[in-house]
Length: 261
Length: 160
Ligand SMILES: Cc1cc2nc3c(=O)[nH]c(=O)nc-3n(C[C@H](O)[C@H](O)[C@H](O)COP(=O)(O)OP(=O)(O)OC[C@H]3O[C@@H](n4cnc5c(N)ncnc54)[C@H](O)[C@@H]3O)c2cc1C
Ligand code: FES
Ligand code: FES
Image (cartoon, rainbow over all chains, first blue to last red; front, top):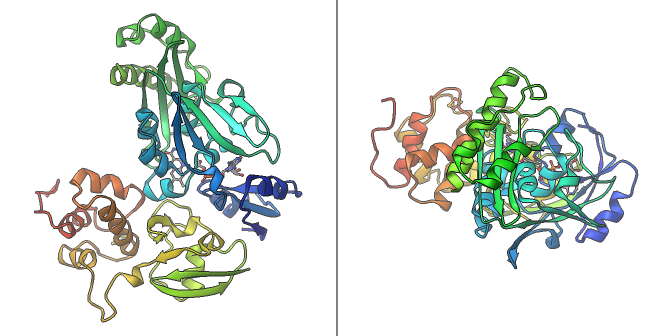
């Protein structure tokens, strides 16, 4: 790992100011960034730790909307997001206990790993990503592998999840990494059903619109069990072929609908 | 940069760089080499310690982040006269270790589990150990040791 300066600001404003320095980068739980630094795939001159910013931590619910501070750990969401059980359950299955004690929602969404769990939850829920300077709808936020709408030095300070009527996340785990080989998050709201898929596509997290249309008509397993999804843009690697992942997308969707209804 | 923290109940201070890992500070700075570094890539869990009471992989946390925190390591588990704590004794009684490399992390993870969930089921023990790899034991005796340490009767653990 190359050397860097280390800052531990106490407020969002101080952190944003510190991030304006050239080659400065935010550090949240470090569960992605520290391995990246060790491999020298990133070489910031300054790390700005978010761990001392109390305002960025916590889970609260008001008027049917669950708000999670951008610096809140996966373990805390698993324990405190009772208002949105499918989300709490998803957070409780990220990695392992030690990873969940350090890793944060902001770090996961900023990183936008194509196999991460939070992107599916945020996209299916129609969440709003709140930053130090604006609010971004989940539909505009995810822009492909490891790519998001965040600007240089922009911080996720909170994420707002409208709590759906029914929801479920089904993750088919890659047992060595514990990331999703394919994961499907289904959320039913008064406006219809949203289905978000992670781990499967070469373009990162995406909404499966055919399944959404079918489930909005009829929220049942039967509505999706005969649908198919084209394997063309699916990921192929040693863990699974394109066809295998396309099959998993459907199977995980069916299971999620079954569990949610 | 300067940090001060409580390690196994004792105040410690140290001079570190921003990039100093907590595992490195414990081992090289304080000489507490019971915290093992197996993979250094946050996969194996040999380096698990508790920071403010929760399990973390010390190879994937900067020492600077532990400033002002209470850190507990394997060295603080036995009594000062060397008497093993209940988890350590159970590992010995149930042959929960062979080479012992993974054991510090296993014991610290087990301690975190039993604090959260004093009477876990076998499935809960296995799920909690997802981030702790052992290349020797095949896990069964580790699971038995942790169940025994929780004061429960030992079920016929799978594959025996
Ligand atoms: C063994 C292991 C297993 C894992 N398994 C899973 C899994 O099953 N599913 C899953 O989804 N993830 C998994 N992860 C990843 C984990 O969830 C990480 O915690 C997460 O991806 C990154 O969060 P972090 O808080 O650690 O961020 P960091 O590693 O600190 O940062 C990641 C990136 O986000 C940026 N960043 C951090 N916080 C913010 C913010 N608030 N605003 C803007 N930018 C920010 C940083 O600058 C950096 O570029 C696993 C990780 C490990 C080590
Ligand atoms: S050495 Fe830290 S997880 Fe392996
Ligand atoms: S006892 Fe050897 S690695 Fe676990």
